[in-house]
Image (cartoon, rainbow, N blue to C red; front, top):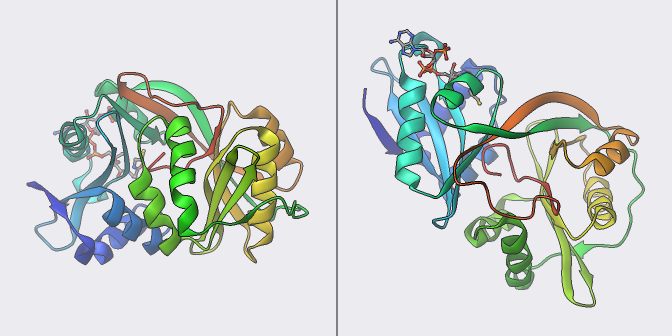
Length: 272
Ligand SMILES: CC(C)(COP(=O)(O)OP(=O)(O)OC[C@H]1O[C@@H](n2cnc3c(N)ncnc32)[C@H](O)[C@@H]1OP(=O)(O)O)[C@@H](O)C(=O)NCCC(=O)NCCS
């Protein structure tokens, strides 16, 4: 059962595999993955996919791995381990980052990933008054956003930022006297609006961005928050955010770069 790169013509197979493992079939995130990442798959000889994984590369410094799925009937035969080893080797970056559910964590530990923190998925109808501190971003803002983002994320992801306006519903920025102080993105999923990535100079700026992004959506919000952001976490919980599940952030190779204090929300669990 060979591992090969697959393209967006296999979207339906990815969605089918995701549904078979009780994941929400979110075509938008998969389409984005095909655009910004490398999707590897193993064909099920009976049709569809036996397994898949996605690697997103940020230069030579960092890659993120996610969307790791193996069909139940092919479980415990080493496919997950092979897919993960393949994705790490193909990216060839100094560090590889991922967030693990409790199902994937033992497998990643065996491959040398180490835990560096925890992250909680939140969802809820946020009871927030718009701050009115941000404005919609245009493509002209992308270079300034990318500059801030590179300093905070610690690896270049302008290719991801350039792909976002086409899939996102809102990209907003807050400016200070020295330029962009923060940016945030919101996009519709199947039954909620995902907020992230969100990068900001401080907690107040992050709060203002979240309030404005949530106000611009008629759906409940959803996001992933590292447990180190205790002030933002308490503020969001007091405004209607409810914990859904926890994941463990893990790193393989060199420590992950960047300024995690200003990296408030990831784009998605699969991408960082
Ligand atoms: C997590 C997941 C990807 C693992 O895939 P997998 O193909 O079963 O993984 P592997 O077969 O490589 O390894 C799983 C276990 O089988 C064992 N194994 C591997 N080959 C084996 C074989 N030939 N015979 C018996 N056991 C074997 C491994 O040692 C490992 O053991 P452990 O559970 O004690 O750690 C899969 O269960 C899945 O898709 N789950 C749902 C989605 C999910 O949670 N994804 C991960 C998100 S972080």
